[in-house]
Length: 220
Figure 1 (cartoon, one colour):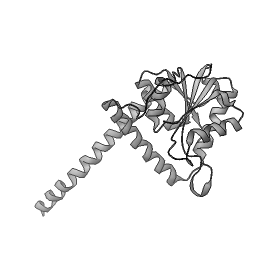
Figure 2 (cartoon, rainbow, N blue to C red):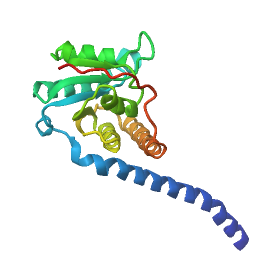
Figure 3 (cartoon, rainbow, N blue to C red):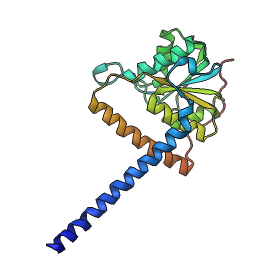
């Protein structure tokens, strides 16, 4: 009986160590995200500084069955709110452009124009394949600084942490969260934890955007 118990304890030791290691990794990545970003993330437009370049992080306009994506509409509303409040001098819309019928920057530009933002104050970045690419390209390609990054709370925290790591003077404005189910929110939370781990790995490896190129001037 004692031998069986010892064997069971040995079998349980490895998964317990693995779980503990994973929890420690998640906690470290949370701290690495929130400590540098918390002072620079705002939920109210009046708390954001004036004269910044806005950076709207891309996502799909639609979800299943052609329904509008609440994450998309939340970011557009937040960017338009900052524009109307006089906080932004122009806006970069950055996202994926993987196919003729899938173009996040184009969809964001059209939605912002419909919200009253002048089209000539909107610049499309078609190489924002992921958050790192969008943030670093905003500075390296477009010379955007200071920068106000616009997305939902957890995403914008990560984006500001990336910007600060790369020496970019950035703050964040939190878009509204969609009314999703508890299961969907759990799935989104797991996805964000994985993204924060990937972010820290990028920091360690010194990862850079997939596409760079010649400078592109912003509107005067």
